[in-house]
Length: 242
Image: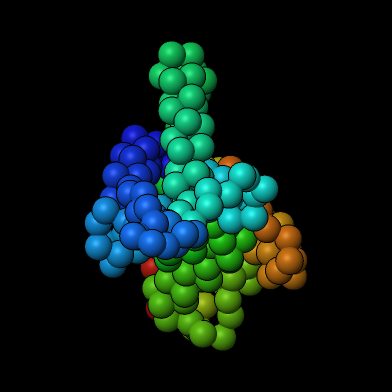
């Protein structure tokens, strides 16, 4: 998450959603309240983005037992925004001053077949579905490149990376020219085994564990695994029989 952007959006929302106390009118009791300083449609539009930020930073913000601000519209949004800002600023300060010392993986640098297919799911927190979508995207691109629909996923790619010569209906993906050496065999045997591994150990369990959400960092690692496979498929040349 871009913390600076999120903090700026939250602070802008608090300005847009500011309310003013409206006292009782003449000769009335108990009709006091609050109203937005800005037109309500502007506040609602700003809230659409803020709600997505709050879902990521404070997942329980809509049900948390906070003291209610009587008669204040969107009081929970504003309370959550204040809390989220404090949390994000604390995290940002720690990161800036201490740092982790570790390199950071930017999801947008993953292969386009992977990242372009999952952005919407990822931003809404559907990490398991995002990994599944990435696996399907890589398979679809491989099928298109090899012009095959009779096989898919592990079966398709293990066959495509086979070191044996292509036969009709079974073209090969070549990461390098076949010079008969160990490097050629290792690269292609490894790529085929890798494809079998990611589809067997990542794609298949995800397809059968629909009620078990992945944590974000684990899902990102799995996206990276499919990104490696995507780059191999994308950069490989197709060798056809005869």
